[in-house]
Length: 95
Image 1 (cartoon, rainbow, N blue to C red):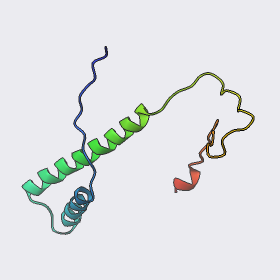
Image 2: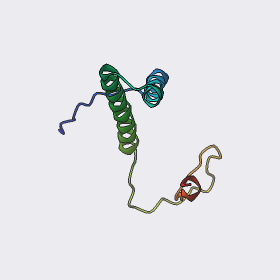
Image 3: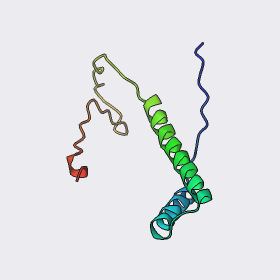
Image 4: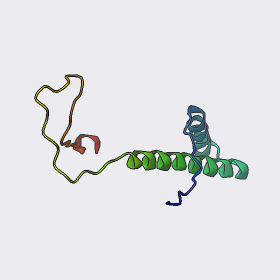
């Protein structure tokens, strides 16, 4: 049996993002106190851990298949869509 590493999961909430943005605006305008700087660093780390957790979850749900896809049945259910290959062009989003 594999040992599963326990990780604390962090939720990215609207309140978390609002507070990060509030501290960022204050930093640009008047500056932050040492306590606020520590809070900002902590909130950013929580945010990054939340993003990492989401990526881990997405990657854990990926199934790699090396075998060719099975032949489609003669009368497939019209409610089911089978995708054999997906191509994504990211160039429009890089600007």
